[in-house]
Image (cartoon, rainbow, N blue to C red; front, side, top):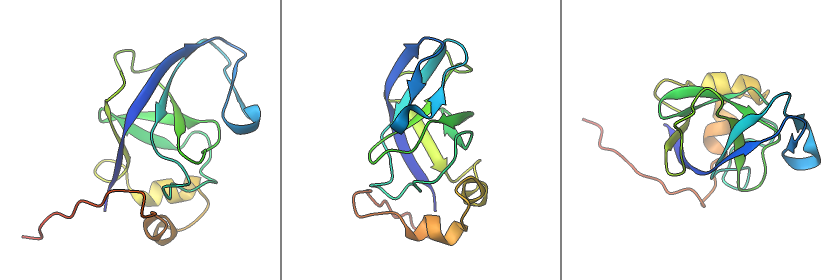
Length: 127
């Protein structure tokens, strides 16, 4: 099983600005951030910690700030060409769900079974 989404916003923010609920993550330097359309309302685990990787255009970038109901935010400083609409992998090929489970302090089964009905399911044939 894999979980995918897309970047919906790319924004430059200044050093010292905060990101996410309660402003728990603060930019140490000017940061190019991306907002991804997925959150705990979709089943992406609410307790996933900053630093958890996601793949944007196949490249690892870290989650920053807290997971919100409908969105997560990532640091795009290493991907200056990223733009809204770019594909994102939350887990799947190149990013094992087991790794994300460690960042969420849970087991993979909890993540896989936690996906809500808001997420479109695309089944692929088993050949």
